[in-house]
Image (cartoon, rainbow, N blue to C red; front, side, top):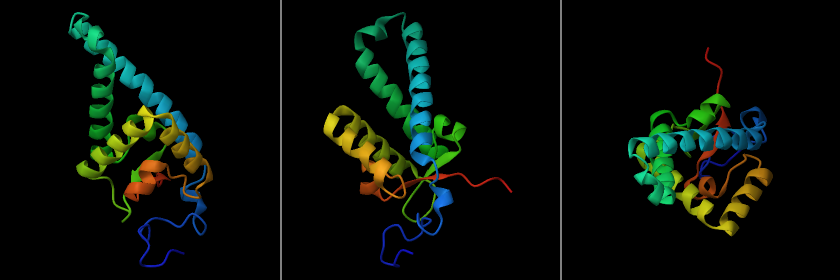
Amino acid sequence: MHSPASPHAALPDPIAQPEFYAGVPTKRLLAWLIDSVLILVFCVIALILTLGIGFFFLPALMLAVGLVYRIATLSRGSATWGMVMMAIELRRHDGARLDPLTAALHTLGYSASMAFVLPQVISVLLMLTDGAGRGLSDMILGTAMLNRRAAG
């Protein structure tokens, strides 16, 4: 059990309550794939709406669409649509759903880690070895990906 001084005190303990973290790394990967496809679809729609002009700015367009998609979905329900489909959600260190600021910071951390190989490798290794399946952004912000509770 975490001590009261622990920044993760309100999150379920991965040793005492492993069901909250069971399969999370695999579910994160599948959610990421779903989200990537959705972002690509939104970018194609944006290309059509801009009559192809967006193609000249494709990397910036994909970054912008990805940022808006992730921040909007994380701040609204603490999960992207891919995460919802995989029945996982991000929670803050105090156990609460993500607020807009934490969603933005998590998304910016994710984007920064995706921009460079070493932080991304470190993040993936952390997800695979940390008992709570936390990545680099999660470690910095104190967030954790959890299996969603069944509606009761």
